[in-house]
Image (cartoon, rainbow over all chains, first blue to last red; front, side, top):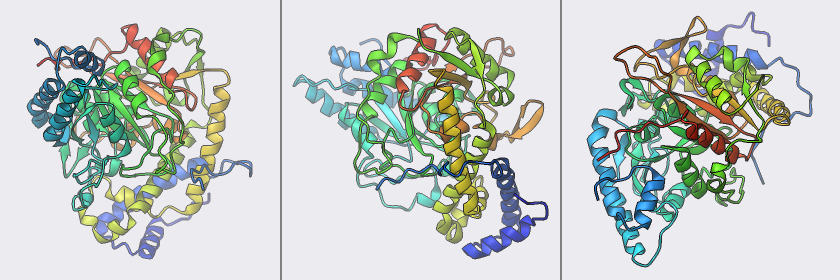
Length: 62
Length: 470
């Protein structure tokens, strides 16, 4: 994960726009805070090397 | 009749012997609820008419010699379960305008067929996204052990209803700890069965990858009694494992002799207050656990569960977040919104970490049959308290009360919670309980329940329900 130069405000604004989510300033600030927390969480596991055969856990049963 | 029994096993016995009618037991439960609920806010709907109708039918059946396994046991359900004729709220105002459920959820049907009496629907965190049951639209549920404190969540109404002695059994759901946290903070027994053991049909979803249904109860025996009734395949639920009933009540008294038991250290010590560590150590000593072991990758597992939860929960509600944001619970709306923005690569990676972490747990279970850890980092916090102390740091309450439960449900292991009671608190203040997690390999709920019962028999664990006397 390379998030040294990542701009959380720009990401949240663009992704929210993609979803059609209209955020006022107060909500946008809190969503940015929450997204930073999620980024910190993701940073903990994203770069741990896993063997390719470790598949995503799934519950779909045809 | 001088005293109406409270525990499920006692209700069944009193009904079977003819000492009490189901109607008498139902009336007593409804009186307890009417008296206590205004102060606790555990129930969002009380189904008195239904409870009395079910009791009347049971009394008529007894005349024909019928006494099913949960005969005359009053119970209630978290308000994310479908109850025929009621709108399924899942704690959320965004659901308040939905049509009433056309049928009971399968788990309610099973309870009803076993003779249990439904007394109502219970409060919860909105959409099950929270650990405190501080619900901005339906009110906070208060902890019966100290009404100034939270009951835990998201099945907070379930924890409070049992702890206050209103009903001996309450159904709940657990995605990241929502049965185990209120069981710990309210001081009652809880069971989160193996992922996909109990059918989820007829319950409002939160995170399909992680949602479990289960129950809270007044004793280990009551837990086993109801759990045995809830088990079984359900063809309408494609996520259900479709296993047959593996009954636990008959093996409950076997104790833990011969079981290889260890206490989880590392992450589970690092994220536990002295009180929580005391509880896990006492349970370990009592059950004869000699080793302390580490489960590799636990912190990352918790982080991965956190990301999946936000992403799946957010995605489920994206349309409503776009169109009706003002109707959402303000305490979780922006967390859900942030979840909708999570890249797919993160959730895919998190799901792969889940598979890897499961292998780490399976390796531990080659050497042990049962693992012990605290259920919550701390005892119940004060209502509105934004943070608590952990390892010399201040951490936000809402995100961290599930620190110790989240990694375990991530890989679907069955867990029973048994409530312990630290002594030596401050004079004049109530003693607050804290639970331990008794964690077994997948499909071995019997081991969790045997350990919970063993702690109860050793007088270490107890739900201490005193307000049940009519």
